[in-house]
Length: 219
Image 1 (cartoon, rainbow, N blue to C red):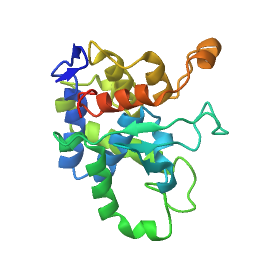
Image 2 (image 1 turned 180 degrees about the horizontal axis):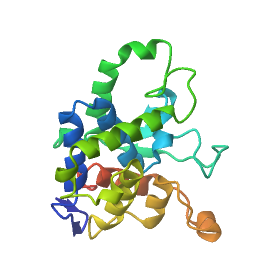
Image 3 (image 1 turned 30 degrees about the vertical axis):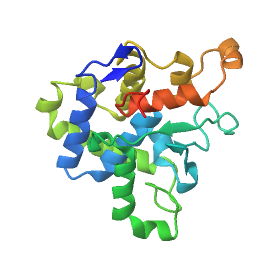
């Protein structure tokens, strides 16, 4: 597919697609939904584990996620919207479909608790620990297959965050701006650039469509 004036490499999503495909084959809907959110948000697993329904709202043509806080901003004063997009051409990487299935499977738990993954009154990090443990088990089970796509020392939850950032910048010859990727991943560009390069919705929307495996300029 094309991205602006550049063209995506047709095999650039192969590793992450293989990852998601194995999760569903393994019957791990939890891993699939968690991984897709981590990929689209370019986030640490601990930040996905504590997500709640109040962190989401609908945009004009996107699903918007906004964290309460992250490692570098415990007050939550500098949290930015993360525009996520459904991919109707590939259900395997469609965040809307994944969340819809998750809500159907876990609808009972939302009657008294708005947390997506973490049990009510449990400590922060429990869902992330569960995710990393199940992911390690999945990688161990399918090690021979996954080594065709992923280096063994990169088979961990943090690798998805790094992979999403790399894909956003190098998966096309016309990527989103580095400031948009940095804001999405909650990375600092340094004191000067953090002051002068502010969040802008257009750049984040372009990035969100790229992460969804879509042409950012398509309707």
